[in-house]
Length: 144
Image (cartoon, rainbow, N blue to C red; front, side, top):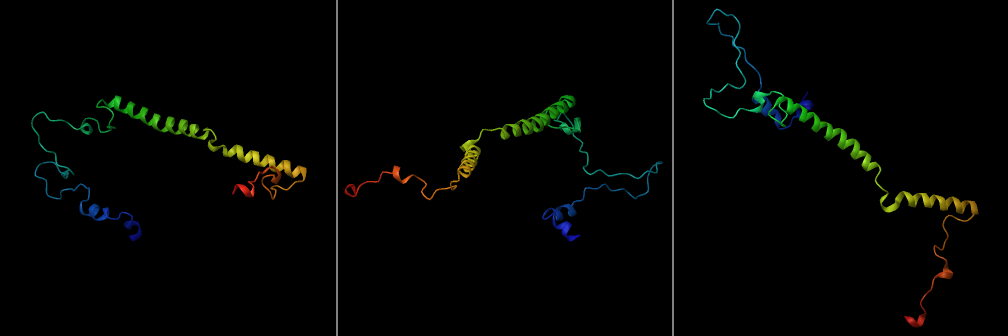
């Protein structure tokens, strides 16, 4: 149990000190009704005048795109479709079919072709002299 609680780290004391619960009153009702009274988590503040209303009060499913609930939901759907479907699918396809930078794949295919050709001819895969010594021109001793 302690291992599971250690995942919360520094947030655990904060969670334990301020539990987000509703409390039911156990006092005797003063009227004819017998139902217990509920206390709210956040008390409703009485404000007078014309103040800005939170979009979450107007639309509990507010996604942050528009104040109109229908437009807000459609904009959210379009944004997630474009962000996930288009970006991941087309982006992944683009990255997969990028050209071979540095010609690494071509170099490997060419090396495999040369190795097969040299094996068919009975030659070693790599000569002890990488370059033909007859074609190398060395400077004379007088030029030094």
